[in-house]
Length: 242
Ligand SMILES: Nc1ncnc2c1ncn2[C@@H]1O[C@H](COP(=O)(O)OP(=O)(O)OP(=O)(O)O)[C@@H](O)[C@H]1O
Ligand SMILES: [Mg+2]
Image (cartoon, rainbow, N blue to C red):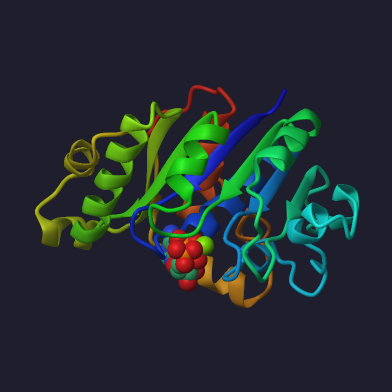
């Protein structure tokens, strides 16, 4: 039975889809079978983060409506043989993801759900479906407050194991806020799974139509290396946070 990991945030635009794609690629590099599900119906863009756009023609709306099989809807990003994407429909699907998730859990080591920004439907659905939740926040006060709210709701929902992923960290921003990384973790009240630096290679990879981890193989520096470290941590390896 595979592990279901939901990626959420309070505030939108914190880097959930970037993180979902990069962690899926990172786990795939470790030899795990991974499926990434775009749970952001209507505003889907996980396909772009995985270097797929025209190739991802079918979606889980087609599967739920019986128009195609699950296998047909799974797209294969180039460069990561054990990774698949299940794209989101353009219209919100009536049924939730529970049945699909149960099937995906049987077939893959990891199933990563990329939710839209905001607390609904992510928090409620993730509390039911996921084994682990990663709340993605950036290092700014609004994002911290919204992540704190998401963490509170997850706690009251009898939540799965929940971690904070701090994205777009830049020393000047922390300095302007008078914060250290530890302060920001304390503020949100969640255990940290990792820090990812602000890195222009994230948007350069997107513009080039490549997954970040394919575009950047540097072992130590940058966002790609940080996501690789988080993937190893998720896979149970002991990797120091800093
Ligand atoms: N570490 C980073 N460094 C630089 N840019 C980043 C980083 N992470 C994400 N970005 C950029 O931030 C923007 C938003 O990222 P992304 O689409 O992943 O956010 P999201 O949380 O999925 O948004 P939404 O809430 O709309 O689904 C994108 O332009 C992306 O390239
Ligand atoms: Mg997104």
